[in-house]
Length: 338
Image (cartoon, rainbow, N blue to C red):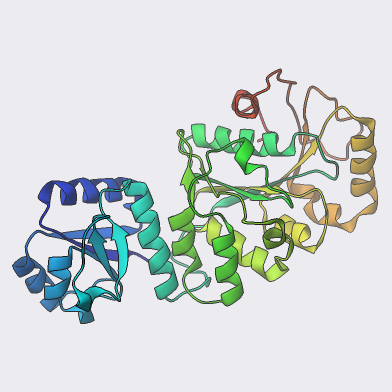
């Protein structure tokens, strides 16, 4: 789905800046048309329809809103509006463009159809899941290191954290809506999940995409297998590599991600308890037999994997740093058994 967006404002410099940044941030999703006068806007709306429009108040009074699925007022914070426009949703002018675009996409997601169905014409990312039966082995660090490695190789990468308790704030700046907004749409089964994902995802300075943490623990804990499937499929449609960071529990949701994944990174460290738990998983759990051919054992923190039932083993050293971002970025230069 491509979103046709009209920007109608008399501020030509701002319109040019806005359209340039939108093209840079979401050029693969949003097509922008600009009108700098009510006359040009009226002429354009006679022959075209738009999914959304950012309208100065004077333009909104003069627009045929029947040709705009989602009219949005583009106003300054202290601007007074005519009574006839009070019911229109508002977008604050001159705010950070990335934030403005995110809000536009959020509104579009709620008003557009297609709440999760797959489009055969869209691409599908390679899905890599990171998991361990033991906590504290550096699973999140490994997941992010692998994501950073793929990013350095020129791939568009999205990191999806599905841990019971999110560790995202330890690695990324958190500003804007969290992933709970997506969970709400999954439950309501209304709107376009893919568009919402594009709206609320964030990117770090290197271009790695991620989501802010859930609003509370239960938001993640109550996800159904169907919710997880819809979420993974929708995320896989907007990137080239989807990296999923899983909780240590091997429940139905984890097993479903295993099924959806193209590769599963099984992470171990030096602890004897970790190897004991991993040995149980590989020898006694039928879930491993289903992923054996796509499993890659990651020996993290300078550990040796021992007698593991696969030749696909990668070794990562222990990195001495109190900064978790430094650790995963350092490890991103190593092999992950590709």
